[in-house]
Image (cartoon, rainbow, N blue to C red; front, side):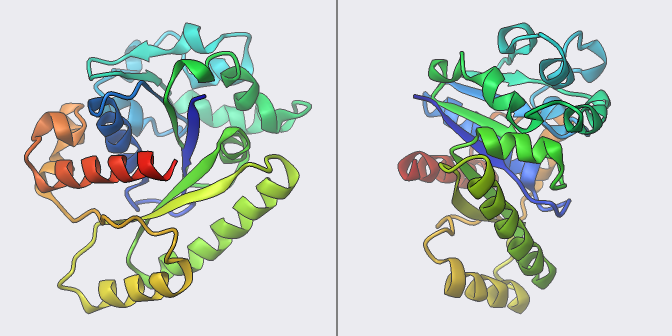
Amino acid sequence: MGKIIAFANQKGGVGKTTSAVNIAASLGVLGYKVLMIDLDPQGNATSGVGVIKKSLKLTAFDLLTTDASVQDVMIKTKFDNLSIIPTNTTLARAEYELADVENGEFVIKNKLAPVVDGFDYIIIDCPPSLGMLTVNAMTAANGVVIPMQCEFFALEGLSQLMFTISRIKSHYNKELNVTGILITMYNNRLILSAQVLSELRKHYADKLFETTVSRNVKLSEAPSFGLPVYYHEKRSKGAVEYLNIAKELAERI
């Protein structure tokens, strides 16, 4: 049975979408069949795999609010074993529409049920908020990956996110667990980074991914070419790190 992993953090700019795109692509490189769902209305995961948002006929919005199926909306990317359910800014309207739907928290779970066994992994890139889209993703998911920077405000946000995950687990999805906390934009020369990482190890040692994601020029460049970093420069530090994280994710699950 395929595993559904939500990438979530209500704080923006933490490398959430970058991590979702590159881990999804890396899992594909490793030979796993992967579906990525772009649930962030900004649509950066969509453009990050080279899909032109203006050309889309159907998006995640249609999946959530109409009778459209996963097969109707899904696009096969040019990357190994990777398909995507794309999005654009219309998805922002789904927050309000889902709130008025009976059992609206279960829409994604129900839509994915017929196809989940056709994939090894389904990666969901959540919006940087804790609204209905994120609740939908977590209600469907087996696990949550939390990308975060090494800064003290991120620690405060992590506590709030853990509480939200706990609430969703108790109300909607008893199988939901934190798959891992992923440190992004790490700089080992900064004392602050070391202090925050040390604090995380005290409280979440069993959840931290062993590999951290460093600041990397090739990793920052790749989205402007519509490429995961492995396909932009496979020998770059970012590509190697995300490939190692994908391997660790597969081992954890």
